[in-house]
Image (tube, rainbow, N blue to C red):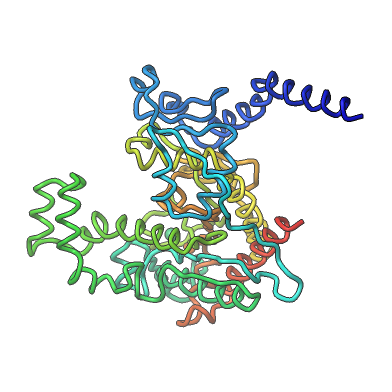
Length: 429
Ligand SMILES: [Zn+2]
């Protein structure tokens, strides 16, 4: 008997050695298709990566690829470790594990475990980050960030009262309502901003006083802005609109991603309200109204220009963040449609979907390489619901000064909440 077991063991070990190549085939196929279907929008990025029997490699350029000068490499048997370690340890720790580009496994580490909801509180133990899109807490800031909509009363076209909305005010109210619901189910919730306090922990006005000059200097140093731009921004002529658009917006988004990653959530909810892109100016209503959600992916040909961006490409390819984001987003979109009674968008329903996105296997869920979908290291849903300029929607959203009391906003919060419950339930089954 002993001999039989020994022979069997030797056979198993040796056969697994011989089948090394064959056993990697499903992984090679899966990851190659993942790049083609979700990450490489213009079929132009193959010079930056290699997926073969050795694992996944990233290169800084086509010349480096030719000379096999790897920037990042992960073996197939390191994928699980990389995945779990990224969810557990800070990014700089993970990045230091690449020695001469090659990822080094750390054996016997303790990882953050997947949670499963318990009976009494359905979200007990979950850490959830919520990012309310934009910063406006009033129409002046709404106008500054061009997320402001003003429509005159026009009874002939069915607009009975004048309408004024700022998307940032709707997202803040939605986030507050959603936070309460999640906390009542035992979740720990982190908000990237509240009311007029942005991710820097202060108002835009205060940021200008405290941090604006430093931001100009450091962006000039890393050549993000020219000397002419620097001169303009430090002069009295600098307009708030330009300061917001060129400097503040991206820095503040980066800060949001940094805060979320530091919090290390189980997943992240990014809340936005949409508009009809063809109705620019948003001074009249539109007939369109759709729900959709974005996840990471759909990199364009110039989107792997820095080492930082290439790391995110590797992360999205080698971890299950994208797969989980798609599942979470599908659950949220399904509840948008059920709760709000608004249709889910197809790829032909907007130009940016067709030109800037890649469809996923799930209805209404699209890959899009946005700053937040790219830099947040957790499963996420970037929700875009309700066209604020839709004839019916604009009038519903216009009700109540305190938007947490608005029925439509309350329904949106409920839809996110139900989507989250569906997602966490499906994970535990
Ligand atoms: Zn938005």
